[in-house]
Amino acid sequence: MSEYKRVISGKLKLKGEKKSKKRKRTEGEKEAKSKADRRDLDDDSVEHGNWKSVEEFSEIVGPVAIELRPHTYLKSLDSGNFVAGVPHKPGEPPAPEEILTAIAVDDSRIALKSGYGKFMSVERNDSVSGIAEAIGAREYWEPVFQDGKMAIQGNNGKFMGLDDEDSVVCSKRRAEADEVVKIRVQARMEAQDPNEGVPVEERGSLVDVEVNYIKKFQKFQDKKMRINPEDRSNLKKALKTGELHEALLDRREKMKADRYCK
Image (tube, rainbow, N blue to C red; front, side, top):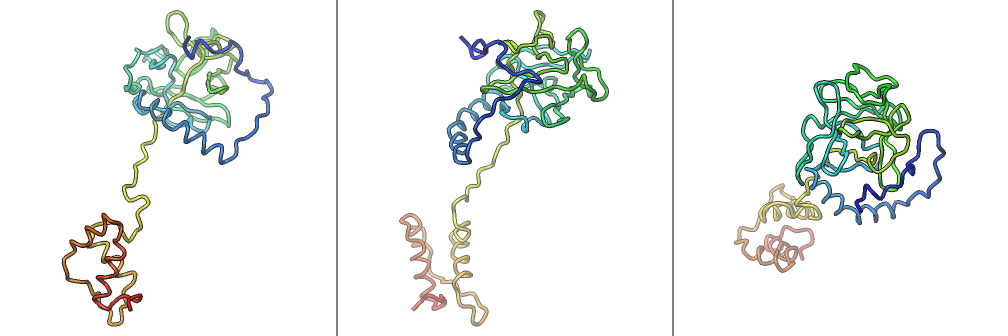
């Protein structure tokens, strides 16, 4: 049975219901959970073209895609209607017409604008259209999170889903399996610093490293930098054996220019 079929009908909370109190995680617990989940989150993002599934309301801002089924996103049509797009292959990102812009209207609701510059609304017959020029009550949408799953509730108190013709509607008052969706945002690619953990003085070539340590320890009595002219091949060996600091000190000592030299 798929993850979507395991969702219990009606378990997601509707507007007006009281929320149960939950113990807040400590910072240590949050960090541990983050480390444990990081690989799964990264793999999931890669599977969706570097678009990650949001876990809290604050992440829903700017370009978003609504995954209605696995690898299948809500798609905007130039007619103002919304349908389920064609399923994507693993690793493919959402298509441009499947990307919306999320705008927070308060601390729990958003408005969604299509690529055609119109806002998504709930009509009286529970259909969903994208023809509104501005944000009003009918353009409010509330993402509801529970037990690691999410549904999107419209201003009519019903949840977003698909009808028999794969058109987007907002017609069920309980979030059943077909109303469990995912909002995805582009995952940020954090560039890893190749020098992370390396002392500032030891960054760059061996020439740079030696100059850095000379600047740090040399006595500038006559304001002249004294660099040992001997071959630096021994520094390469020292770098591999972990004796770089001692080798640099020996070179400076020969120049009688280190404040720690005898």
